[in-house]
Length: 231
Picture (cartoon, rainbow, N blue to C red):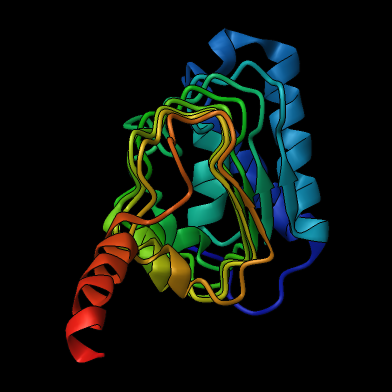
């Protein structure tokens, strides 16, 4: 169970030490002792400053120790970075107790430069998320629930394996920055013009023959055909 009330630093760290002992059997970071120590230090810092930073630690999966401390509400971060690791997904079967529901206070998530092939189906729980970096992974699609992130302002999807973008990307009506560069996209989704707050859009390095949106072109063509008869 979690710690009720407003626990002291010592009380929280003692509880974290208990969690650490229970997670000693984890295979995170291939048994690297220095990495294990880095994980412990980063998790303790996150309780103090709300930021969990574990970039470039050769992690193959979400650390079980971190998962346990988060689910116990010992170190709930508002910013989380696992950039430049070897993750294939945000969470793993080795930490089944954690889900996006447990980190729904996140405002920033950085998973750039991993090997992620899919996102959690419940990512829509991250209702406070403002910035999400998913660049340089192996993603091909976005889960439907991601379109529920109505506070999201920055979404970086460059250098993945997208052939198309979710048809309802326009539901992200707060989005200001969208980087789709260096994928294999050959057509822009019809709802893209609904992103009225968009200030930055990069679609370079794709297979786009033009920047026109097909349904918009079709509607323009229909209007052009009607024009002579209405004249």
